[in-house]
Length: 96
Image (cartoon, rainbow, N blue to C red; front, top):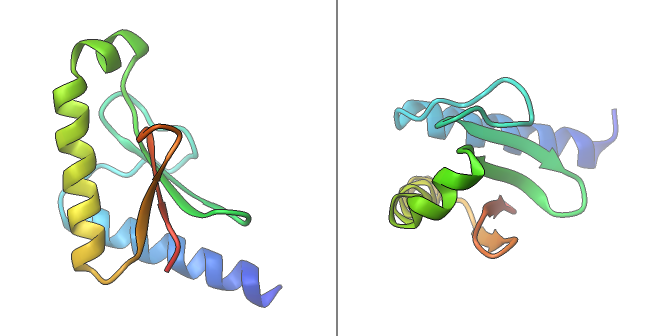
């Protein structure tokens, strides 16, 4: 196994564990279900975290989406991770 791949998987596992310990539902697959989180390792960016909701709910509940992303960011930063937003705030990317 490649060292970079292993490090990425270790980071993904750590992110999943931190979010589950904080009470979030982390989906086992890449795609998030309604209200759950998608978490996966992207070798070119880092560990990607998305919050799943339908497109019409995304528009109607922008304030809720902002609050969820703020909560996610807070949990991850307090756990010592570096986090940035991507795709106009629809994804959080954890780089360490």
